[in-house]
Length: 214
Ligand SMILES: [Zn+2]
Image (cartoon, rainbow, N blue to C red):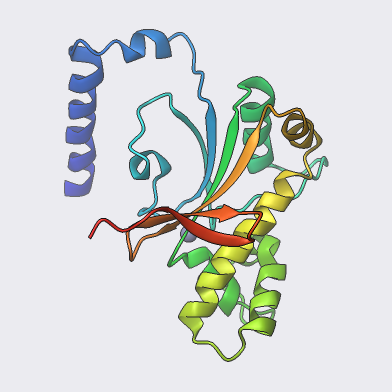
């Protein structure tokens, strides 16, 4: 009950800030949202995109799932939660940036690295993280002698590249990227170091976007 009380107190503070003060943000937001940035982040409690980037209500349109994955474009009759949110953000809100926000110590990627057909992790997780299976194969091939932590980190970053590629399988995303209306970014939050890295497609490396403050 204490945990829920903490959330209720938190909402009271939020309410004071945005509904009792002179802050007029919600005067506009109650009419409509106009976020310019879509973030695809992990469900992990430590990597909330709005908290990590110190954003305000209305700034970010956010999709969160296990291991911040983007599935490929599959216009069929299955339930597509990620694809429908992508469609809404890109075609209707017309966001100008998409950030795939990966992170270190990702439980979803750890599950991908540990799962096998003989020993599945759960009922749904294995099939979901299978989106990034090529990343696991590449890591196991190239870094077979490295410790598991290093393999996981490499897989977290390689999986992000698969998500970035999968974004471009959606025709309305590719169109907007080609027209210069939409830019795609890959950010990796290193939560041990407290740093943000960004994928540079020219060097094919994750480079420091914001280094350590300590
Ligand atoms: Zn994660």
